[in-house]
Amino acid sequence: MSGLMADAKRNGNPAEMASAIDGLAEGLGSLGDEMVELQKRAALGAVAGLLAHEVNNILTPVLAYVRLAQRADADDQAVQRALDEAESGVRRTTEIASAILSLGRGGGRDASARANVLDVIRQSAATLGRDLSRDGITCRIVAPEDIDAAIEPTPLQQVLVNLLQNARSAILSSKRGRGSISVTCSTWNTDRVRIEVADDGPGISEAARKRMFEPFVRGGNGTAGTGLGLTVCRELLRAAKGDISFTPSESGGATFVIDLPAAPKETAVRSEAA
Image 1: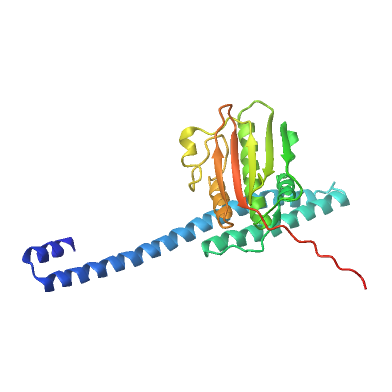
Image 2: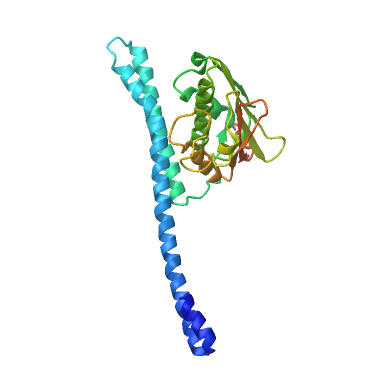
């Protein structure tokens, strides 16, 4: 194509130059269509990978609860609790699947979405399936009761569960036997909500930090998995006009900072009996 353009320019023939330009434009248009199609296929592949990763994370403890309920020596109370937890996991699977699929469709932000941050943090810690104290890990939660973020509870919970799982894996990989995780929340008197998830594990190498939010790149802190967790976190938060970042610490460990818009304050409505 560039050869035709060069020949037309050397000949100085306006008609030939116009024809060459038309041919070049047609070729670029065709190339653009092919690029769009390739991007669509890549997006679908990425969404499928994200969905498979998250569903696996949620259904693994669900299977453990089902097996607990099937045990012959389990009492009625333990069976009921196991079934309740399994049902909760299945419901959360469908919700997170819908959230991730909406990313693939380019779903917009729900202006009415809101999540009480303290409630979601507590639910996320409980969702881990195994109490952190059994692994020698203390978890400190510091968050006011009245802070709501403009995001649906399920995506925020999935982000926090990912970060808590990564923090636990990092601490266990350090082989020290004990560690701590802290989850704090504040608004700093702004219209943004800031949630920090920090651990005192081995930290993340400088080389790994540069690519930690790319698909299929692991954090380099001893955590297992496919490397899709942080990619999921960033996409779910960005769909709610938020983001996530990493703050290095000289003393080691890792701190992830979630930034989200604050939900408008709810106005109390009073009704008086006549």
